[in-house]
Image (cartoon, rainbow, N blue to C red; front, side):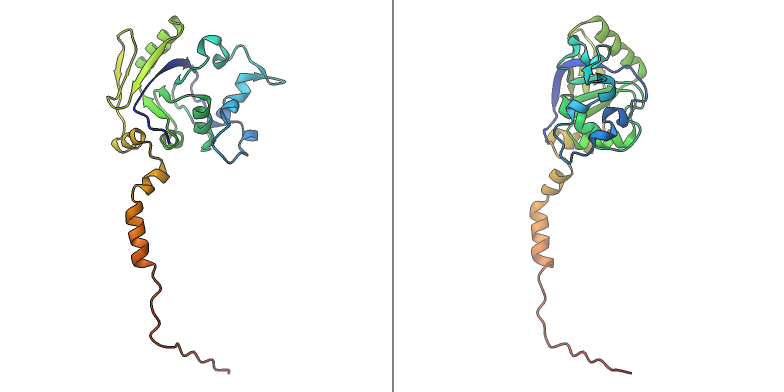
Length: 211
């Protein structure tokens, strides 16, 4: 998993509450078993008109937001089903950080496991970020996990809190497998010690009696 320390990127605003994972990746696209390739399906029903023509009214199709890597969102982002395909699609599309006032728990946890930083800010702070994005084409922010701040080049500076364990995993790029491999030497030692077949010290005499 790619480490996350500091990221500066173009901002895209998703000004909707209760955006669910079924909209992030509709059910007909969850048959793939790898994490790659889901970006083209992100918000598919909103991004495309019939015939898979780009919907000009959808925010991610606006030219000013092309190449965005920081997503602004509203309350309860990532609700709905627990499908991990949703953060896969967000990452594959190009987003490295999400800023929102609240998240669904499972989606929030899955973001950390896939190298995405979900930052929690207040509603007032999010309102200000949405305002600045609307008023400044090409608006960019820096999300600094080491310092735990969100900044821009116009003087904005918002601090955020994050669980220390999750912060450490993102900084080091550790998913569940990576965390396990950090203890590879201990695991190997355990296997050598406990997985030996004990020697037989005598034949086992088993007698069967018919009745």
